[in-house]
Image (cartoon, rainbow, N blue to C red; front, side):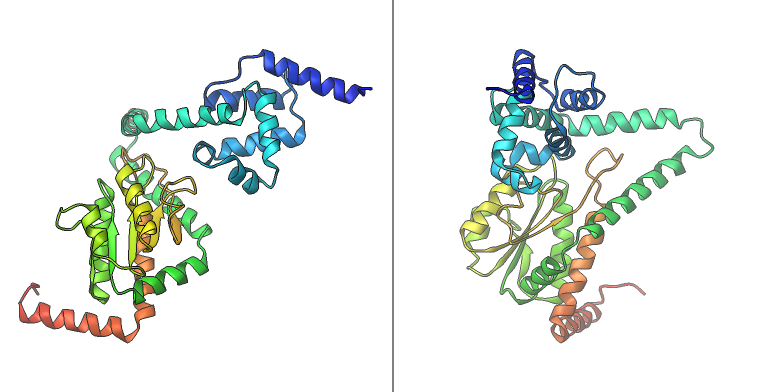
Length: 321
């Protein structure tokens, strides 16, 4: 015989199934607020409400991770996510997850124009400030500082040590980043090349990634870098490198990044900013730190490499006094 509590839960589930569930992440956020205020014709219970709120804090992860991975990260059973989905009115977890995937795809399609719209709106708001030009630069600088503090808070000593050792000891190192992140790849390649030999961009000669990977052997290292909206070919190169038994180091933004699964070491650097594209400041700071760790790992080898470089610069009269 049903208890009153069971009847109430089933009635709530029936109400939810009769409703049209939100088809956007923003709609889900509004629903969570209404549920918390007891303004929705739906009751989730404290645990389910908390789980839903946590999922909405990490929409990119929900869009790409499996139900098993998400459940483990939330310390719940996968069945909990399935029940939550159906209680909200979705056909199942896949239907619920499609809301996050669609929202992510839509955001990626308009990433740059949306960033620019925010920039224009902000400049109009501050147009009558005493020094709006300075204010804009200061705002970007402070945002970069926030991103630096963000990656510092989640640095793993074990991953830093492991990556530094790989980059110091591997016979060959290749670096791969495209579009805006080709600049970061070139910076890392130049810095590593100052302190060790056989470092290059993965496709330095424009012959293609397959040709670049074919020149490497198991135990060599490939550094890949990309952030949302991710460059598909960089993600594909990371997977191909792992399949070829190469050690992959990823410099990216979140656990939802497609560069994370194939990586032996992954470093997550925030890039939240009012800049009209991806903010690079925190990425450069992190890479400088990683390069210093590699130099420390190399020890006298790095010192000898730098001294040899200085002799060549002097003999070729490259620098102006």
